Image (cartoon, rainbow, N blue to C red; front, side, top):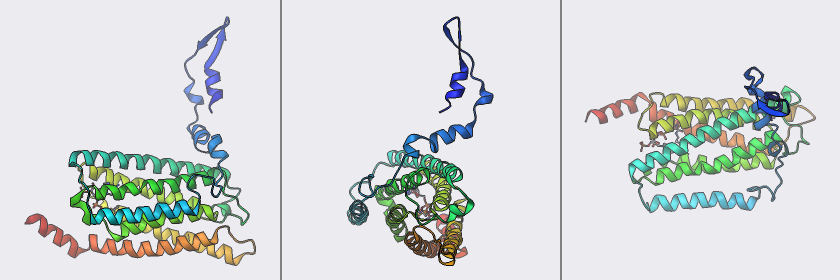
Length: 298
Ligand SMILES: CC(C)(COP(=O)(O)OP(=O)(O)OC[C@H]1O[C@@H](n2cnc3c(N)ncnc32)[C@H](O)[C@@H]1OP(=O)(O)O)[C@@H](O)C(=O)NCCC(=O)NCCSC(=O)CC(=O)O
């Protein structure tokens, strides 16, 4: 905490405490961020321990993902209620705003943790095989995992509007269900690459949920395609990261931690890339744009 700054602002004159104006030149934003997002005792002492940390058991994971899939299937077949449009838009806007803040905080927290905790650049890509899932980097990996469960609300928001149920795509449900398993395995196997995957995805999500926020507020941003392009770029950059890890793991004697987590993530990214390229061609091709224009003119 910035105790030195606070202490410097307080001085005593004739035994009476006088609060002097804060010397703003001594406030260092980076050290405040480090205090809150890296060196906070809760973050510094975090440890993922299987069966003890909330959400860390295979049973919890199975229950969560199966509940999501069965509820989504049930509600899509039996739309239960449609919220009044005004209220739904407000709830959606708030939900997106929360996700922008959470994603941004995780991106900053994970970046600072990685920069301050990594002994060398190699560590950012490849954790040594004896790495334990504890400390700031794994705290943010855990927050990332929990945030993916919170993102299930996206699906609920689509289901709460009878008119938008057609927006519930295979891509959406497959992504939301599988990403939770990927994050769990990341922690369970102490997976190398976690810092880069988390920071990249959080930054893309700040952009994506800003797009959704504006939609919920009634605007239709012209840069929708740019969001999809960034998502595709994210998946392509993951290939570079995973190629480096596999190169290090199989090309050196020391190896990298959590290689099975990396194999799962790489497989997931391949399927997402395929689905997103398909989404891209269906949403933005010249033919699609022409059809949309004709629809508007009718
Ligand atoms: C541009 C995209 C981000 C979104 O494409 P969409 O076709 O879903 O976009 P859209 O124009 O229909 O979105 C506008 C509609 O979404 C509603 N909406 C607003 N907030 C929402 C939220 N948090 N979740 C779901 N829907 C939401 C708006 O009210 C509006 O509804 P109305 O039209 O009724 O007013 C795209 O690149 C994409 O990701 N498509 C896949 C669909 C998806 O589910 N993506 C998110 C998870 S995948 C992911 O997250 C990958 C990653 O990690 O990067």
